[in-house]
Length: 271
Image (cartoon, rainbow, N blue to C red; front, side, top):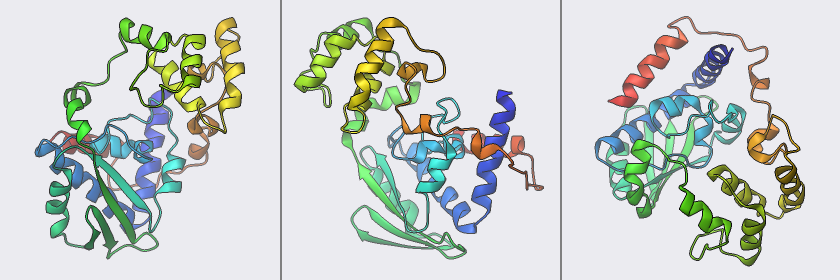
């Protein structure tokens, strides 16, 4: 069942990108930017903005978050990637210089750097999708996470969890307010997932959910789905059924199978 859903997800994305030449050109442009940055040793954020909602961008190496594993719906990506949108790429040191090299001379695209780090891109073959803005966001702190991004994220160690659990969070952005320290000591986070959840709840629209989530955690009164949020839908991805977009989906590709194309994409990502 999982392999079937994965195949359907890949086919859905391929058909969506193929529906407009501009979308396909945008996909290749993002791939070229990521590939050149990897070759030059520039660190890319493992997941930034709405880009991790695309499985194809994951296979290409544009980001390092598997949306199928995390149940991120492609529908959010299609809502965000539209004509005239801004695509942010967060990079470590040297990212802007590499981007300028990649974007300097390209066939089929008109590219103008309007302000430093922001590029207006026109896809000359695009139909409804013919224009986007790419913004390179330099973030030198990413350089410190080079090894982590390459080898993958590890679970928090027990000592770190104990520090969070007693509210010893001086200098930890989003976790050093008095209210958050109160939550940390009361909630007793047991994993990175718990810390992500508390961070998400610390918002005017979601803070009301905290008492019920705390009750369910303390009483184990919850069932799947939404185990990471103790049975209460919190994240945007949980409010969309990731299988809805697949219902009634038809395969319109005759040039090559999804398996063959995904294999080519992975091969390209490893170059």
